[in-house]
Length: 159
Image (tube, rainbow, N blue to C red):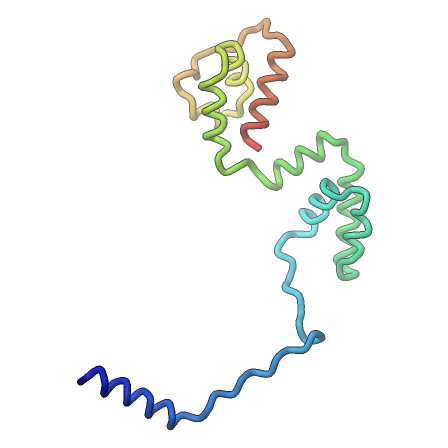
């Protein structure tokens, strides 16, 4: 019985309230784009890396004040050597979320010589995750190809 009364009371109260008025729909001219969530430097970096041929055209479509600043960033990135530009991308957009786990899988599966060389090339904050192998010293006569392979496998695990 109580439930029925509550339901009836709510229905009666709704009838007594004034009718809701719908908000008028916004016209296309009134709709504004949200503010940029990324800094212009990062936008220019992504455009430079992903669409280098059309980068100036794409950045030119921004609002005038922002387009000028973005194009200056683009000129700076285009003047960088490829390796430096890739390093900038890696710094700006960080490591993979599962990079430490992938690195651990690589080190467990790697042959001993490659593991020692990889541990030698790891940054200190990653090296501290592997106390089992921390005492292992890198060979002084490690082949340059082995060093390059270890560096590449570390990069692949962390990206």
